[in-house]
Image 1 (cartoon, rainbow, N blue to C red):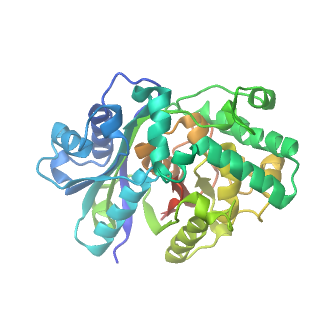
Image 2 (image 1 turned 180 degrees about the horizontal axis):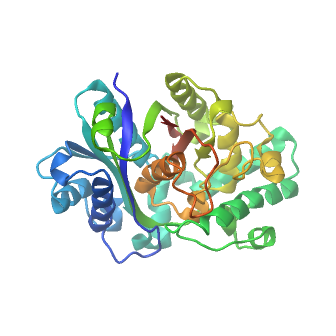
Length: 392
């Protein structure tokens, strides 16, 4: 298979109540990615777009089709991917396979969502479509409810008193906001402290409001290409997607014997590690799916960075900070940067690529010597997609 490079990048501001449509936000990010690639829209051979809730938030299907037409990518395949919160990452994975196989040389990948247009009640309902609609949502379970249950399972399984765990979870949010404040695209650019988290409004005990990521609007895009194309036209430090993995689980309630771990994540990341020929200790920086603060602990352990039950201590010791053992979510993560569902995975690609290119120095968040980055995105009850990116 051919090596696949990240050529150009584009990213809109993640925000609440964007005045732009999904088509407009996606077109903005896409044209920036194409321009940075030293290409024109006519050079794009296919577009792979993550979008989950377009039909609900604007009554707009086939967002990918209209955005491609608006920017001049005429008559190419424009494909929408829906895998709940992992939609954008799945679009990237599929594009990698098309280029690696030799079928395409240059592919646009993107993601977009306008979740805030729906308001909280409808947004909450549509997010829950990533659960089993009859046996989970029908029983009153929402994603805050699920992750509140995971908090309790985690506390019991690893013998961590709930009050101590809540304080450790608050450290996740505090760290994310510290770095998100320096991210010009982040939705929430405000530092918080542990008391701010613990005293914020209860959402679903033991989760507080500041344990939860926000609803968001925004788009991100990247141009992927073959190694040969990248070497011909790019003047930037090459970054390659060297490993991909994806696995799915059934409804979360059926995984009760395995929880709080999510088996699909462990299978997916092992696929990505194996393809890239690396181990967890080789990863220099990670963007993981922190939809709720407890999710960071669960993900970091399943990705192999810490022993099970030890991730809370790692955040407490600063091992996930920019100067720590494994810097995590230096972009601000979903908690501070925001979470426009279809765009999240592509946004993770954006920020890991920027780190590996050493383009985060001016923001004061460059991870020194970063050569290998990992992306982890969770969709719904258990659709996991992982990507390994490596600097040449």
